[in-house]
Image 1 (cartoon, rainbow, N blue to C red):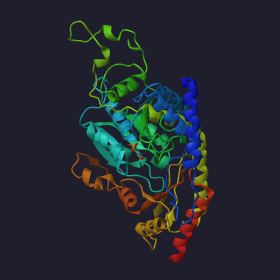
Image 2: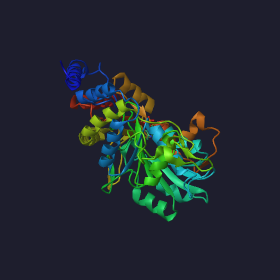
Image 3: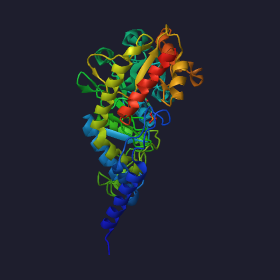
Image 4: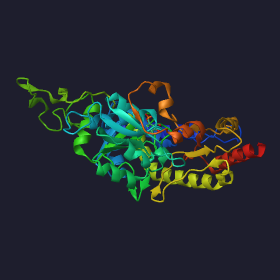
Length: 438
Ligand SMILES: Cc1ncc(COP(=O)(O)O)c(C=O)c1O
């Protein structure tokens, strides 16, 4: 008679066989197979972890999520990691936490947050969702990050924070930004959804500001399918962010704490204004949501974290290769630029179709797509040109010419670890074919 653990191991061994037979890298046929801009990179371990979590059947956030949170924190070098169900949710709890009534000097409706107009939508949306006012500034061409030259012009008596993404993994100029943040006593929120592993002057991006965010959607450096996390050095901010994630409840228990709670007296607490004791798990100090990550996602994330250093190296290597090969088209395509203090863990490879080019972005991306080389726009372009943002309350600094150029003329191709040398070469050949046909 097999015991339960033998049974589990037998199932997991079969899962590994299934991976070998079904999921292992399919053959690549140039011109027929797609060269995706991003994708999941995994082996049998991710499948085994997922199945193992299903066999445990905890389902919601639990012991695997606890492990994931600690392991990710160790990689980044922060104590507080708050896993959530997406990068968008991470951005939402980050801004909401800094707007908490529990913070004496938290942000209040009508306060302003400086943000690049060329942002991912859900970097800006939490500002609006919290009744704050985005102040849009332009970005730099080539590195596609917030242009620090506009920061002073964006400042007002209501400015409380700066929120920006390190675009496509490329660190923004943290020397200038930190100087501005410190001089004006502002909050800094770093969206590192595309920048896990990137450093500025040897320090990980996301550890400069008060709170930072990650996405684990399949295009990102690691994936859990849907998933994300906020992270911070501040225990207080983390407690508030966890409360906002978990329905608004005050409880600081971990997911797998004993019935009586981490404090040991969950049922013997008093609620202000209520006679007698009250179960602390039902005591609410925030207007919250439910944005938790689940066990299956976390179990997959644990396997992905083991591969992260290798993923980052591979992204850097692929970037270097494409940079060197695509240089020959520099007359018409501006290659990405990065600061000498930046060591980007690239998300993708951005290209700007120069105004002088005898072709449009649409022409080159259509050509590449026809060759089955996937391309993407740099997200929303100039966000205020998008219909949803037409009537929002905001301030705009200057004419945002670069954001418009990003919207019109920038696209990116992939460099994720799933791109083999054959695929990278095929990608470069496809560019060559486009320029030969010109
Ligand atoms: C910079 C940036 N921020 C936020 C997000 C949102 O992440 P998610 O798709 O996990 O909600 C993304 C998504 O790709 C992103 O690129």
